Length: 467
Image (cartoon, rainbow, N blue to C red; front, side, top):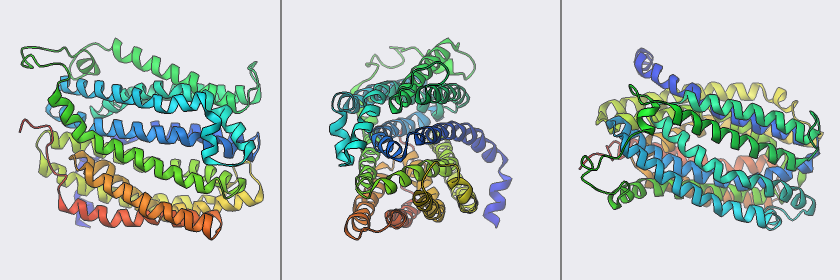
């Protein structure tokens, strides 16, 4: 009780946390509501279309996790540099993020555009789903490089506590996306009826608009008192920087040492999660459609806890970069307590609303039953997953303890989650909700060993100090 009282009395901590959490959560929530709207609109085309698009989007899922790794790794350094107010080094971090992110996007764009059917056959043997999914994938892949640039800028802005501008721009892009989705899928508003390809085209257009608005907005911002313009317009001072290159070998080494484990972590974790889809795709159209719809609910149910974790990563990074280690330790403890309390409430709310949630999906009685039981499983695991997200994404990574975070994520998926999926789905042919519950056992493993690592305090360090 004393810990709760101390946390509630720390008004500065709570104010800063929610000032960051609310915009980030809103932005993520809008993205997830877009995914839900996509699922509902595509649902009008049938369960096979929902399942096919869900599998096709696994390519974007792996790409987005690669970008999340790049942006998280960049954010670790940018947050600590911002704590030291080293704007030029933040600009260096952005440049590295852009180079790696755009290059990585082409690894997904090329097969998505030129070999979409081959990619879809990895996920399912069903020829109808392959054909529908390939149509969607060939269009949506165009958006990947644009997304890489936009996400890199947004991650750096977040690390510097600038969160309102990205939320505003994302809101505009998402509203446009939903309107175009409706028009292109249904053929309304004078637009051609393009089915699943129309949904992909709407996303591409919205991504282009989002990218353009973000670039125009930040470049029109003038330098001022601690503004975005101070960072964007920071000039390279040769004398101050001892005439070293703008991105020199020492900086590249520091960036890769910190960011590469995070990039590998998210990419390998994403591949592991995609392996689940290989199992689900072989459990039948009903199971695949149910897990696709459940994923939309999952993302919305977890969005606030991801927001808190993102806020924690920024604040802890700022504390550590400013050499305020005791403050970082106290803030980490507060975040764990806050995440636990809110996630228990979130789990209860998700369970209570499960019937209302199921009713919004256009699905058969069997798929509705699957979704209802999947949501029950989801609710049971929400607190554990919320704590894991906080420890791995925020606490361990903020202090550069990225190897430990990598080990926890990768070993959980590949040594526990995937074997559970194969055993439950392909060997014993259990219903989808049992397989889903078995897969999530990995979260219990990560919670135990993640908390042990947190208590060891190896993350409690300044990684951008001169020493």
